[in-house]
Image (tube, helix red, strand yellow):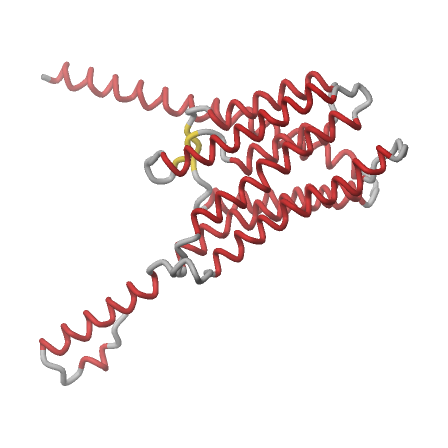
Length: 290
């Protein structure tokens, strides 16, 4: 805003020129940086990518390698750490867009965001599924690898469509990748029968490439999402530490995540049907009034 005291004694032309210079400066500050410079939002995006890689590393060293070496009990600390890292990655993904809108973004922002999301919400959950198929008591490596590839391809297609298709503001087409990844991991943590779990994961992959519209996490929804991430991290910490009720908390959190993923498209469809019914009734009322 322009300080009124600075305008005292200025002519109309000088005042207009001052306003124009300040508007030009504001536009310059908010304009995207060149590809050679990273913005604050870009560092959050890179943090998301690092979290995805470290989650894969944690699952490999704490779950897969002990299993291959004959340890029947996987390290729950490593599993909890891996999931916590992906939740932190989700938090970075939630905030990088908000920071980019509030502060100056860079020309690399959108590309970095897609690449980081591919690591954390595509490769990492697909790797979780593949490892689960190896360490599960009813192991089926070939089928679990196929479902893992399906999850990865669903995320690739989802991200490509997000870049190519313009949606109206505040709307995603298809389940957002972070939500899909967390749902896949929640299914793995519950350890249902392998075939049932893989079918559920296949359903999540379908929702990510579907045309169902999901609201973007903005305002109260963003706050609720952040609170849910913090609560989930707390449940994982209790489970990893072996605290009384930790197993119950982890299972409740996983079931709540799966229920949310299952109910979200139904609520969206119900809202759209309600809007169409309201439009039909409004047109009928207008025709009767005529």
